[in-house]
Image (cartoon, rainbow, N blue to C red; front, side, top):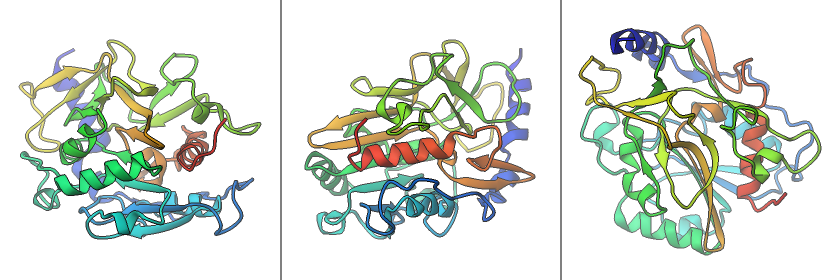
Length: 305
């Protein structure tokens, strides 16, 4: 199949007008049948809003925050640079689609680092001392913005759009135990009866390598590639591309006394409307995504299976 045909399918699925209309689904089911923590008494989760983030607590990540709040977590925004003082009371820091100010309105190369060397050093120490980082970098330009931060934890992102090598229906892309693309981990096993995850779905995004990590989501061989344009959604037959064989879209690691969860896709953890369809746990095609969200948050908070 010529790349042109695949690109046409991709543009239909994630064209710029759909992204412009991408918004939180205020009708999504954010309930939690059996909360892990007492209401408002759980660990503090900070959502980064200090780095031109595409996802914020009151914006596209409002359903994400609501689910965690309904599980008992204390969810708050974090604004401004990362400092030891600002992180002192937090158990989990969520960074979802951060950007350098240069790319806030211009999604083209270059994609400078969103985080300073000092911030990265602060965050690395905080994790080593027992904090937990939840890092998400979606499709280009988001991976480029976290290159320095990801590298501090041994993670290397592809700064592109990960798509099937053959034309497929619109996202989600499905990963499952049966297919061997969803790893075994306390997160996928769950912490109580009925919480096991057998299949989840992601919505385009990026891929990464993490040699020392525990695999949660891996791309099947021969099935996905990363298209790496110089400007988001501007594709042609000459757009650079690379195979995603051996690359991941979800992984965890222990770092000192802390924990890290990395994902190359962010919409899967919230509920959104885009154009005439749904993304994340609002999509009827991914009924276990909300439980996956809860399991990730609980593991980062120190719950063990």
